[in-house]
Length: 551
Image (cartoon, rainbow, N blue to C red):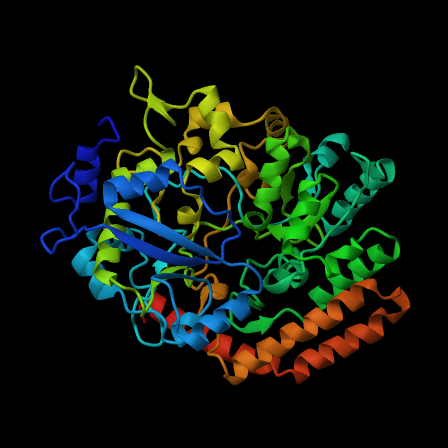
């Protein structure tokens, strides 16, 4: 195995960008990699990296690049609207929907990639994403996909997506029972809450719901999974006829919200869930008094890390593949997919797209990616006498500490920029903590006990040991949203407003009012024109099936 070292010579060779290693750039036309500050807008809920963060120093010293972050504060739609109305854009914009592309805020990238970024071109093509990344309306590539582009073996042992989550201490006290159905899940939470009405002196919260702003999909998404459907966003797809249908008005949603209504009447639903913002939600979860919720792990992982880092790993969460009844096969866990429609695009106001793409090419070089992911050899990891990589106990403690990572790693860049996932060309995993010996050393005692009790090797297997193959079109949530101002877009916007208005009422109303409110809600969703949205999604689904099947 070739030894990896972080040196000016190696980084120059790996990145294929330096004309004179160890020689400072003068910014002249003879040096294509002159110093540049790149401004980036991100919607990630992260802290600003400190000025002395060693990875950003490495970017500056080795690649002549300084990153200036504009991290979203406040309402996402308002910020995006102001940017589009003013035309005032940073160099790179993180996208997770179509608005910036529809507004003409991003430049096409495919020619620039081919000319200036062979590392990125390989990354897209080797992972099978080059054609999928092209925008359906015009065939251009407008953004660099941030997640889901896998090379070689996919080592990830931990589950990162949607689940009904339960505090590990709740499972332990119950003797690690097999929990399959919705009723079993809630009985588990209720029994613990009855026995432990407070945790660390604060009232226990049996079940909470994230309802704030765009995060509110946690409010209406559970019925889809409980009914055994994979994550198709706002709808379900018949696997035979390929018919797309919203699930907001289906009986599966009625069944879920009726259950929440009953639980609320008994005092087991968090009332503040309908008024709290995202930060307040995270604060509740990190307090250790929340027993369960439905969410995607990446949305609350900071709270989970805070519990772990404060020595309360027993209060962190395990995801369970809960369904309505035992006859339903869960479809929570999926095989890796390109995170289409998400990533970073170069704006029309970027001061130097060519220089930015040269930086991306350097950043996507294999050895630089390894350094960005594993850390600096000798500081964050090293090889043993058999040339196997490892970390010391202190290095492992650092690497799983969120505060240390903010100060010493590149969390924001991992969120927004393209990255290798899976394996490097030598077969080693792109995340050193996935390497079997490191994985074994880093699993905490509470998790070892949990995995042993359920006969699994990680949280992925806790959700599904052998996930079914993804369908050809999967998933529909990463298809382009309806254009702003279209009938389909306005119908979905109205439907979301209706859900935000009615669903909290439906949950918190007296049970005697449930049927009336549910009927009103369904009728209003239909009056909002949800059929227009379904027709748009059906068209996009049919187009994707045709294009991706090669027919």
